[in-house]
Length: 192
Image 1 (spheres, rainbow, N blue to C red):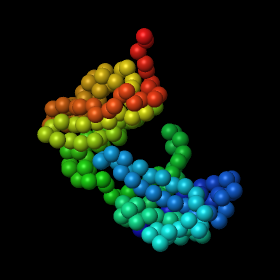
Image 2: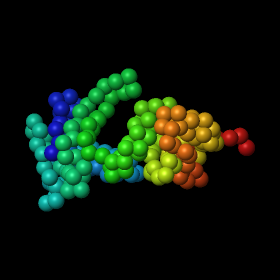
Image 3: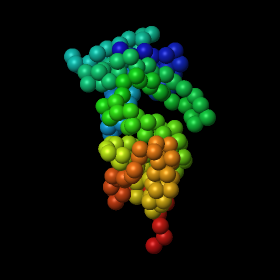
Image 4: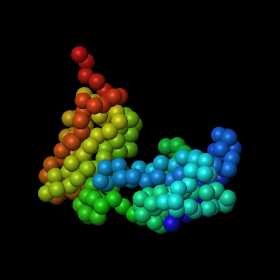
């Protein structure tokens, strides 16, 4: 169901040692974060936290518990630990994809968001999530530092929309579905 690399095993064992979590299992949970992305949660749990619905995988003496719903989204996936210029962390390589990404146009929009848009907005503590693509319209949700930011219209029209339209001529409009009044830590707030 899931493969765990040597680098991930080594990091988990190191974390077990430094966090006094020796002998604990790893709970892996996956959920859809909007219709175009998975969100992964990996945490230590006591071995006795295994339920009847969990699928258990053992790698080099470490037990991994995966609930039934998450298991279906992890078939063929691998867990790695990577170090790069942007930092170090666990990374899933997952051949499965949320239903929206079965649409080739949505998949292309998502790819551009991940490769060209999100690295830039991440420097401001933000993220852009694809919510839907219908009739040439792209529906986005801005998160983190972008939610409630006073510069969001400029970012959306001159940055995101311009990039998407240049890359994908079928895109006619980019719409923001974000509730900006709920933003708690915007990167930029206009002067009052």
